[in-house]
Image (cartoon, rainbow, N blue to C red):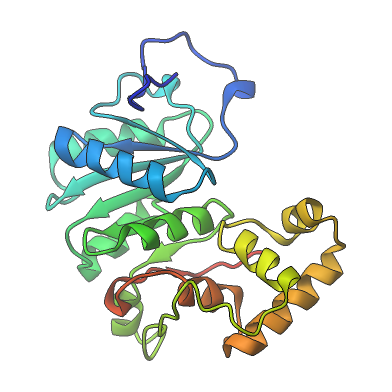
Length: 242
């Protein structure tokens, strides 16, 4: 349960699996200022695509019901006792939430270590709020995010994606605009088809036309191109679903 300010109530009774939100994010940060600022920013920017709550500590992993838990460790590393304590608490949550990490650096060793500990989203404090929302929406569909600078240093990509303005929808039909809007909310083809009363084949056709007009080849590139973020801070979704 969350308070009106979005603070997670960890004193409630142990929930059963039916109470787990399908799209909810829990922010874990012991700094009141940064925690509340990020909470208010995400609530304002996410446009209802997911619920957001926050807490300053983990009191019993059994009480965490969010789909995704994001831990802010700032400049600390995994060898810090408090960081490891929280990581172990999150890994002990029964329903196995998606784990995200916020840090002040994209250091290669820290990124790699986060992946080994099971984190599927790696955010840096240089990212814009719009990009964080886009990344959360995408990871909620099953992807993995790391800073593109990390991938470039590993030789996995040769350059970051060049962003396009999110309002750059000139040349799209009304239906294509509707499909694009839902895609940028992190919704898979099946959900887009249901909401627009289309077949999945039709949705795929519209996406192909949108990508052709935008000069991109994948859903990942399309989503990244429409996120307001500096090229150096855009995360990349590795595993793309339909």
